[in-house]
Length: 198
Image (cartoon, rainbow, N blue to C red; front, side, top):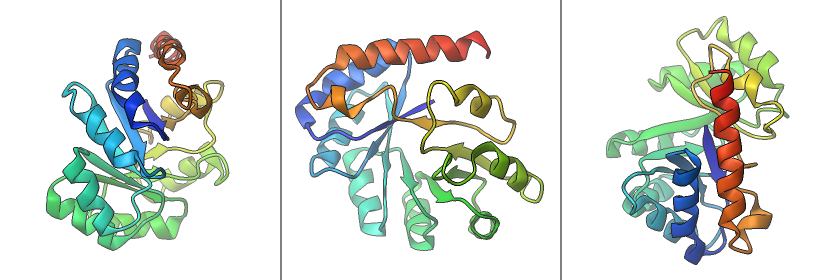
Protein backbone atom coordinates (compact mmCIF):
# COMPACT_ATOMS: atom_id res chain seq x y z
CA UNK A 1 0.00 0.00 0.00
CA UNK A 2 1.50 3.30 -1.10
CA UNK A 3 0.02 6.52 0.34
CA UNK A 4 -0.03 9.25 -2.32
CA UNK A 5 0.91 12.52 -0.61
CA UNK A 6 0.05 16.03 -1.79
CA UNK A 7 1.44 18.38 0.85
CA UNK A 8 1.73 22.16 0.72
CA UNK A 9 3.46 22.56 4.10
CA UNK A 10 7.02 21.27 4.44
CA UNK A 11 6.87 21.88 8.20
CA UNK A 12 4.32 19.06 8.49
CA UNK A 13 6.51 16.53 6.63
CA UNK A 14 8.45 15.07 9.61
CA UNK A 15 5.26 14.55 11.62
CA UNK A 16 3.54 13.05 8.58
CA UNK A 17 6.37 10.58 8.10
CA UNK A 18 6.15 9.62 11.79
CA UNK A 19 2.37 9.16 11.51
CA UNK A 20 2.73 6.80 8.53
CA UNK A 21 5.39 4.69 10.24
CA UNK A 22 3.42 4.63 13.52
CA UNK A 23 0.36 3.58 11.54
CA UNK A 24 2.22 0.64 10.06
CA UNK A 25 3.34 1.78 6.61
CA UNK A 26 6.93 2.39 5.57
CA UNK A 27 6.43 3.65 2.04
CA UNK A 28 5.05 6.87 0.54
CA UNK A 29 4.84 8.66 -2.79
CA UNK A 30 5.25 12.43 -2.55
CA UNK A 31 3.74 14.05 -5.64
CA UNK A 32 5.59 16.94 -7.23
CA UNK A 33 2.43 19.04 -7.40
CA UNK A 34 3.27 21.73 -4.85
CA UNK A 35 6.10 24.28 -4.56
CA UNK A 36 7.28 22.60 -1.36
CA UNK A 37 7.15 19.01 -2.66
CA UNK A 38 10.92 18.48 -2.92
CA UNK A 39 11.41 19.82 0.60
CA UNK A 40 8.63 17.52 1.82
CA UNK A 41 10.26 14.57 0.09
CA UNK A 42 13.68 15.39 1.53
CA UNK A 43 12.38 15.76 5.08
CA UNK A 44 10.44 12.51 4.91
CA UNK A 45 13.31 10.58 3.33
CA UNK A 46 15.75 11.86 5.96
CA UNK A 47 14.22 9.50 8.54
CA UNK A 48 15.88 6.53 6.89
CA UNK A 49 13.13 4.06 7.83
CA UNK A 50 10.58 5.23 5.26
CA UNK A 51 10.86 4.36 1.57
CA UNK A 52 9.96 7.63 -0.15
CA UNK A 53 9.42 8.13 -3.86
CA UNK A 54 8.48 11.03 -6.07
CA UNK A 55 5.20 11.08 -7.97
CA UNK A 56 3.88 13.19 -10.85
CA UNK A 57 7.38 13.18 -12.37
CA UNK A 58 7.08 14.50 -15.93
CA UNK A 59 10.64 15.27 -17.10
CA UNK A 60 14.18 13.91 -16.78
CA UNK A 61 15.11 17.10 -14.93
CA UNK A 62 12.48 16.33 -12.30
CA UNK A 63 13.96 12.86 -11.95
CA UNK A 64 17.32 14.47 -11.13
CA UNK A 65 15.83 16.85 -8.58
CA UNK A 66 13.74 14.13 -6.94
CA UNK A 67 16.66 11.72 -6.59
CA UNK A 68 18.83 14.55 -5.22
CA UNK A 69 16.11 15.14 -2.61
CA UNK A 70 16.18 11.50 -1.56
CA UNK A 71 13.61 9.76 -3.77
CA UNK A 72 14.19 6.01 -3.95
CA UNK A 73 11.64 5.47 -6.73
CA UNK A 74 9.99 7.54 -9.45
CA UNK A 75 6.31 7.47 -10.42
CA UNK A 76 4.97 9.16 -13.54
CA UNK A 77 1.36 9.54 -14.69
CA UNK A 78 2.30 8.55 -18.23
CA UNK A 79 4.93 6.61 -20.15
CA UNK A 80 7.83 8.86 -21.16
CA UNK A 81 10.92 7.09 -22.51
CA UNK A 82 13.24 9.92 -21.44
CA UNK A 83 11.99 9.81 -17.86
CA UNK A 84 12.42 6.03 -17.79
CA UNK A 85 15.92 6.28 -19.25
CA UNK A 86 17.04 8.91 -16.74
CA UNK A 87 15.73 6.90 -13.79
CA UNK A 88 17.57 3.84 -15.08
CA UNK A 89 20.76 5.89 -15.48
CA UNK A 90 20.49 6.95 -11.85
CA UNK A 91 19.71 3.42 -10.68
CA UNK A 92 16.26 4.11 -9.23
CA UNK A 93 13.05 2.18 -9.78
CA UNK A 94 10.64 3.89 -12.16
CA UNK A 95 6.91 3.23 -12.43
CA UNK A 96 5.47 5.03 -15.44
CA UNK A 97 1.73 5.17 -15.94
CA UNK A 98 0.01 3.01 -18.52
CA UNK A 99 -3.68 2.57 -19.31
CA UNK A 100 -3.72 0.84 -22.71
CA UNK A 101 -2.28 -2.18 -24.48
CA UNK A 102 -0.10 0.09 -26.64
CA UNK A 103 1.42 1.69 -23.54
CA UNK A 104 1.90 -1.68 -21.83
CA UNK A 105 3.71 -3.00 -24.89
CA UNK A 106 5.90 0.12 -25.02
CA UNK A 107 6.77 -0.34 -21.34
CA UNK A 108 7.92 -3.89 -21.98
CA UNK A 109 10.10 -2.67 -24.86
CA UNK A 110 11.75 -0.26 -22.42
CA UNK A 111 12.65 -3.21 -20.20
CA UNK A 112 10.02 -2.54 -17.54
CA UNK A 113 8.18 -5.23 -15.62
CA UNK A 114 6.42 -2.99 -13.07
CA UNK A 115 4.23 -0.04 -14.05
CA UNK A 116 1.59 2.26 -12.63
CA UNK A 117 -1.96 1.78 -13.92
CA UNK A 118 -3.48 5.26 -14.05
CA UNK A 119 -6.08 6.61 -13.70
CA UNK A 120 -7.23 3.28 -12.32
CA UNK A 121 -10.94 3.70 -11.77
CA UNK A 122 -11.52 6.09 -14.67
CA UNK A 123 -9.57 3.83 -17.04
CA UNK A 124 -11.64 0.74 -16.29
CA UNK A 125 -10.07 -0.60 -13.12
CA UNK A 126 -9.77 -4.32 -12.58
CA UNK A 127 -11.53 -5.23 -15.83
CA UNK A 128 -8.81 -3.55 -17.85
CA UNK A 129 -5.98 -4.87 -15.67
CA UNK A 130 -7.35 -8.40 -16.10
CA UNK A 131 -7.61 -7.90 -19.84
CA UNK A 132 -4.02 -6.63 -20.05
CA UNK A 133 -2.78 -9.53 -17.95
CA UNK A 134 -3.49 -11.96 -20.80
CA UNK A 135 -1.12 -10.66 -23.47
CA UNK A 136 1.25 -9.01 -21.00
CA UNK A 137 1.68 -11.70 -18.38
CA UNK A 138 5.15 -10.47 -17.38
CA UNK A 139 3.84 -7.04 -16.42
CA UNK A 140 2.76 -6.16 -12.87
CA UNK A 141 0.68 -3.12 -12.01
CA UNK A 142 0.34 -0.50 -9.26
CA UNK A 143 -3.13 0.98 -9.80
CA UNK A 144 -3.65 4.52 -8.56
CA UNK A 145 -6.49 6.97 -9.00
CA UNK A 146 -9.96 6.79 -7.53
CA UNK A 147 -9.32 3.75 -5.32
CA UNK A 148 -10.83 3.88 -1.83
CA UNK A 149 -10.75 1.77 1.31
CA UNK A 150 -14.06 0.28 0.14
CA UNK A 151 -12.61 -0.88 -3.20
CA UNK A 152 -8.99 -1.68 -2.30
CA UNK A 153 -9.52 -5.34 -1.37
CA UNK A 154 -10.32 -6.38 -4.94
CA UNK A 155 -7.17 -4.64 -6.13
CA UNK A 156 -4.65 -5.94 -3.61
CA UNK A 157 -5.82 -9.53 -4.06
CA UNK A 158 -5.49 -9.47 -7.86
CA UNK A 159 -2.53 -11.57 -9.11
CA UNK A 160 -1.31 -8.92 -11.58
CA UNK A 161 -1.07 -6.21 -8.92
CA UNK A 162 2.05 -5.74 -6.77
CA UNK A 163 1.00 -2.55 -4.94
CA UNK A 164 -1.86 -0.06 -4.74
CA UNK A 165 -1.59 3.71 -4.48
CA UNK A 166 -4.21 5.70 -2.62
CA UNK A 167 -4.76 9.04 -0.96
CA UNK A 168 -7.52 8.27 1.56
CA UNK A 169 -4.95 7.75 4.33
CA UNK A 170 -3.42 11.18 3.71
CA UNK A 171 -6.39 13.47 3.00
CA UNK A 172 -5.42 16.99 1.99
CA UNK A 173 -8.04 18.41 4.33
CA UNK A 174 -6.08 16.94 7.25
CA UNK A 175 -2.62 17.70 5.89
CA UNK A 176 -3.45 21.33 5.19
CA UNK A 177 -4.07 21.91 8.90
CA UNK A 178 -1.28 19.64 10.12
CA UNK A 179 -3.66 17.00 11.47
CA UNK A 180 -1.32 13.99 11.43
CA UNK A 181 -3.34 12.20 14.12
CA UNK A 182 -6.02 11.59 11.50
CA UNK A 183 -3.36 10.26 9.11
CA UNK A 184 -2.07 7.84 11.72
CA UNK A 185 -5.60 6.64 12.52
CA UNK A 186 -6.54 6.14 8.86
CA UNK A 187 -3.24 4.38 8.20
CA UNK A 188 -3.76 2.02 11.13
CA UNK A 189 -7.29 1.25 9.95
CA UNK A 190 -6.06 0.54 6.43
CA UNK A 191 -3.23 -1.72 7.59
CA UNK A 192 -5.57 -3.63 9.91
CA UNK A 193 -8.09 -4.07 7.09
CA UNK A 194 -5.45 -5.32 4.67
CA UNK A 195 -4.04 -7.69 7.28
CA UNK A 196 -7.53 -9.15 7.80
CA UNK A 197 -7.51 -10.81 4.39
CA UNK A 198 -3.78 -11.11 3.66
